[in-house]
Image 1 (cartoon, rainbow, N blue to C red):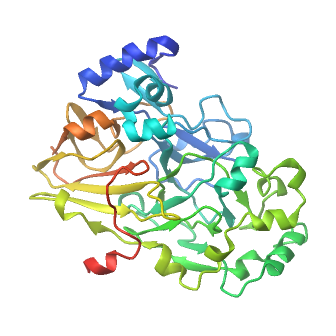
Image 2 (tube, rainbow, N blue to C red):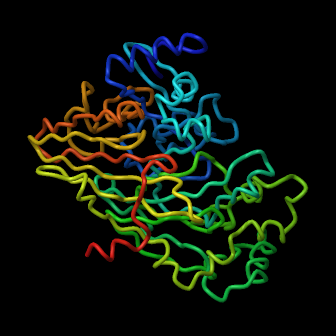
Amino acid sequence: MFKSQVVAGDKVASVLDQAMKANGGLLRLAPNWVPRSFMHPGRRIKLHPDDWYAYGTHRGGIDERWFGSTTEAMNEGRVPDEGLSYVTFEGQRFLLKDAVVKGGARIVGKKIWDTYQRWPVYSKFFDNMGPIPHHMHQQAQHAKLTGQEGKPEAYYFPPQYNNVDNNFPYTFMGLEPGTTKADLRKCLENWDKGDNGILYLSRAYQLKRGEGWLIPAGVLHAPGSLCTYEPQWGSDVFGMYQNIVEGRYVPWSLLVKDVPPDKHQDLDYIIDQLDWEKNVDTHFYEHNALKPIVDKAASGQGYTDKWIVYGHIDGKQLFSAKELTVEPGAKCVLKDPGASCWITVQGKGRMGKLNLQTPAMIRFGEETEDEVFITAEAAQAGVEIENTGSEPLVGLRYFGPDTHEKVPMVGDYRKAQ
């Protein structure tokens, strides 16, 4: 486990201020591992093989690493800080969640702080050996009934974390146009009669490294086996609509995990949680596929900044993400309009005074040099990034809602071709 000393309560403000001053508004984050009882780890997120079941085999394998998270993982039997990121500084650590409370607008920016009073998004590496159940994340109006928030999300498949495809590099998304609610109801009625056949109502898309998808809340999806970088809204709600995956049974309890108790057997309610029109969209690929777009204004000699997650969901800019590549020996000044969380996926270098190093293997509880929270204060001042290695330095960073005055829209990659 962590060797650093935990700081909490009133002591956080003082240590946070020291860390901000020492590193120019940059906060070093420690790896944040999350297990899932119903998943089979894909083994590509650098966690040491001896630690895949660090929470105990009864909790399942660790197949996720969360970045810049102030959102708890809603796992049964979870430890108190599961899913929450820690800031580390000179042998001490404190929750990023507490840092946001104490630092407010300095950390997340005035607009986000005034609107949400928290950091309302997070991202993760999601890494599985095979496919996972066809499921959805509740829309806001349904999640609210259980005291939670809805969760739209996005995918990007970083080449550096996908040296192998694993067992099923295809993702089922939505429902085949023409599918009826009666068709889906039969699948739910057949939950305990063998495979409920929901995938016969959907279509799969082959996943491609270096590309991605935008997935609104209420849209069914069964992620495939490429390691996925997932910027998303700060919630952990979901409902599994598929009952058997690769021969493994999915209990009904995972379908209704975030459904009001009096609706656990109400098939009409369970189906009505879906955004039906988005699921049966005849132009699903056109409306949801993402391909990188070079941000020419943010690129220069020796460095390239690309949009990898962009677009609006129901007319709102909820999150976005970029990929920065700095060539060996080059440097640049990163100046964004708001806070972001950075994860280094290739190479080594420095960000301001902080070292950047992509680890080959990480022990559970080890503190690494690959993840940084770039506070709003630092982002607006500008942060120098230098590649000190012999290969490209590549980092992914995601942003919160309405950070950018303008982002590309889904489909704009066609204009850049």
